[in-house]
Image (cartoon, rainbow, N blue to C red):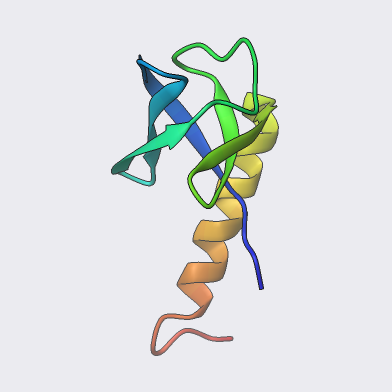
Length: 79
């Protein structure tokens, strides 16, 4: 199974690179496939590449679903 995750761009770097925030973890990714990205944008990240820009509301809703799913997997949860 492949999973693409929304991430917020925190800084741009040289050579079509950017640093994104993935739930508190910062990771350098490639922006080679997406034009016009600026810090603060959300992008969909898969295997180290931004695949597309994402509306902030949609990104936050998706991240909330990931958090909820993670909570359901915790020991003792009522799943």
